[in-house]
Image (cartoon, rainbow, N blue to C red):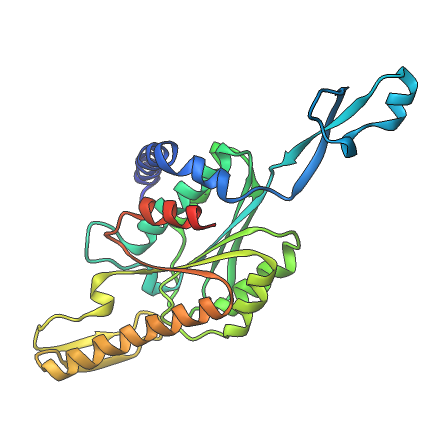
Length: 287
């Protein structure tokens, strides 16, 4: 894409997602994630109903009347967005490529976080980690994240989720919100999910196009794996072949759901045509 096209696309995503975010997601996001604890705010005179354990005994003794410490929730959190940029994510048969759909969801999450003064960071990965944008606050930072997802070079390589998760955990020690975007076409070590979910709030989002799950009858076709370069001829007119392919995809999704559930992590299987705001709203409510 040309620079002007990128700017236009980012602006369009911002307009669409900020409307959705402000209308439905921001309040639920704030309720779902309470922050890391309480921090001191001020000292004020005791009022009826205040907790005795909040009394500031030093100031009470000095002024000979009771004072209490006022505590506020320490709201600030860190959100990390991990995006698979293997070549299979640069694909789509509907109105959006997977990468564009991911950019839109990431924008909604980012603006929700920004509205609560939280930091947002980005990791782009495939067979290795290709780019890291450290967590920061603010609208301009979210727009930069959207732009990076849209303009990344989606590489013809097998994605290694394990490496991305290991890298993220090695750098970000504090408990964070982790959103992992991939089509999960490649194998991974489920042990890494368990380790990550013990330390962070983890949501895996399988982003898929409808043609990922079912291949239509188009006769003999040369199928090409965008990540490995492997090519194979298939008779898509065979009802048995199409059924076997569809069942294998269903089994893969069931295995993903089981892996995330067994790891105490959350998982969503999201079609590029779906209304993701409803799915995120439901996720925040459950949290």
